[in-house]
Amino acid sequence: MPEPEKKLTEAQKSAVAFMTRPKPNFDAWRSVREAEERQEAEEKAAAVAKAEAEAIANPKVGDRMPDGTIYAGISPDTNQRMYAAPADAPLCMNFNDAAKYATDLKVGDKQDFRVPTKTELNILFENREKGALKGTFDLTGALYASWYWSSTPYNALNACDQRFRDGRQGSDPPHMISSVRCVR
Image 1 (tube, helix red, strand yellow):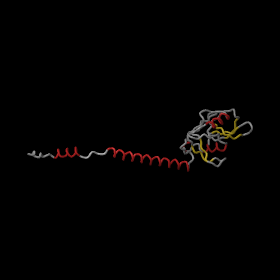
Image 2 (image 1 turned 135 degrees about the horizontal axis):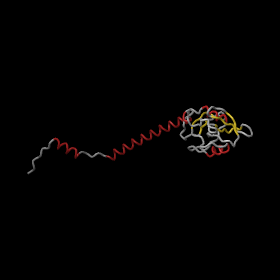
Image 3 (image 1 turned 180 degrees about the vertical axis):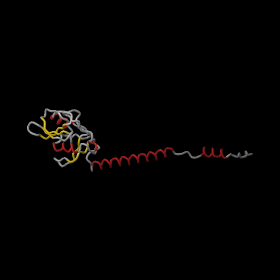
Image 4 (image 1 turned 60 degrees about the vertical axis):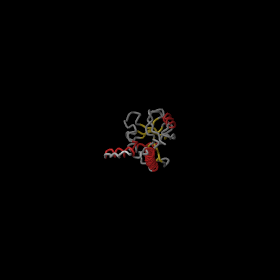
């Protein structure tokens, strides 16, 4: 004889329904979530790449470039864009050491730096307070530090230089020491 059917309470019915429910497919859920995260990361990377491409294509004076250089303006000598190293050489140096420092300097993947010409140096002076250039030049007026070398000869014995505290242009013999900011 069959056993009489037991009546379940609502709580018991709910517990049985919970225990016998279909198990969620966590692997499918995880792969959907990973695909969403991957798509989100790809979209973010594309937006960053687009912003970097825009900055490179249409830079403003003082914009920091993805390679670490700073857009400094148009060179009056070449009519090309001029990019400055992000900082001065770590020490004041004589003219020959400044030229060697520029040749050896590498910023990001760029290694084609040089000492700026007299007119390029003046562009750096004029733009010294713009964007990422602001605060990166020595304006203290210290004896040598606020003077910057240019690659332009003044005469057979001297090279042109410029004081960034006030823009005064002058010249010094190559054995004197001054600051140097390289450009490319």
